Structures are given as structure tokens and as C-alpha cells.
Length: 228
Ligand SMILES: Nc1ncnc2c1ncn2[C@@H]1O[C@H](COP(=O)(O)OP(=O)(O)OP(=O)(O)O)[C@@H](O)[C@H]1O
Figure (cartoon, rainbow, N blue to C red):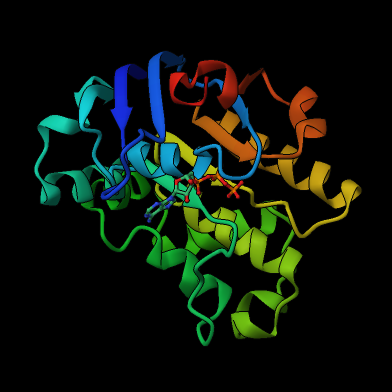
């Protein structure tokens, strides 16, 4: 599903590379936990996997597509079609409702819209189902997002990532503002969504105590030659 080979990435103006990864593979449906100290390059790796940044050397293949062989527009399309993202700060539109925020998740992808049709769903019906299953009560689904608690916003961000069934879900520290019980509940809800269609999850955190919930844990320090 995902194959990283001989990758080197340096931020512009920096003499030393931030990442040097010889080999990392993630299987279809795998739930991988990636951890490492602050500044070790976790978010940088996610931005490469999401096609926001490009490596200077090596390649990243997702679903057999070599991201470095795509131009900017094609990488943007690839991301919209195949990758759902949940960020630390959620990136929701504050004055829109949860339903409207979730529907936006598939607005830029004909493929994700087609996936909804195949399931006999509309964007709104799918958004409602996802928010129900992720535990956001009906009243809250129609309020403005900026009136919601952090835990509720996190569920909206997760539903937006899953709408239209993208194959690959990237989550960057989405649980850092939650207490331990709510963190575990949220991660299990993510897994339930992913299991429905064998989505692959890459979950990044510096909190290694979450690792036992996942299929596999990888320490960035162990695979990053640049930090050795
Ligand atoms: N936009 C950028 N321009 C230049 N350097 C950057 C940029 N973003 C990150 N870096 C540098 O890359 C290195 C890795 O940062 P990154 O944010 O990937 O680490 P991280 O492991 O995700 O950290 P954290 O856990 O604190 O989020 C740091 O030295 C950082 O200063």
C-alpha cells in the first residue's frame, strides 16, 4: 500500500537533511503508530506522504503511484482522492456546522463522491452516519463548529477524513488535548471506521503509551538515518 525507498528530504536553506529513510512499508489495512521526540521529523514525513512536500531523493509510492513522478496538480488530486487527514488543530471551518464541514471533505474529489454513490449514500447522509458512529449527538451536528468542545471537534475532523472512503488516513497528534479515557475511545472509533473498508491508518504521536492499541509501532529515530 505504501512504500518509502531511499528517501532524503532537507528543508530549504538547511545543510543537513531532516529525513533519510531507507525503507518503510505499510500494508493495506495496517494501523501503524509512528512516534518520536519533538522536532524529530514526524510532521515532515506526513507532509511528504500527503504530497505537500517533495523529497529531493528516493521515492514514496502509495497505491503503486510514485508521488515524485506527479506534478503539483496531480499530487493535489491524488491527495484529495486517496488520503484523509486529521490534524492536531483540526483545520475546521469555524462558522459552518459539523455536517457542512464533513461534506467539504469530499467536495474536491470526484472519486470520493463516486464512492458515496456506489454505497447508495449522499454526502449529507454519509456525513450524518459518520458523525453518529463517531459519537457526536444529533443536536450538536447542526451547531457552529466554534461552539463545540475539543473532543467534539476532533470527531468532526475524523468524520471529514473518512467521508468518501479514502484508502489512507493520516492522523497527526489528534488526541493531544484529550484525557487518557477519551483518547482510547477516540482511537477505537477511528479503527471501527477504518475496518469497515480496510483503510490504512498512520497515526503520529509522541505519546508512546498509545502504541499497544495499534498493529505496529515504529520509532522515527530508529528508521531515520539523518538523526543517527
Ligand atoms: N516549514 C519548515 N521550514 C523549515 N524547517 C522546518 C519546517 N517545518 C519543520 N522544520 C524543521 O524540521 C525538523 C522536524 O520538524 P517536524 O515538525 O517534522 O518535527 P516533529 O517530530 O513533527 O515535531 P513535533 O512533535 O514537535 O510536532 C525541525 O528541525 C524543524 O525545525
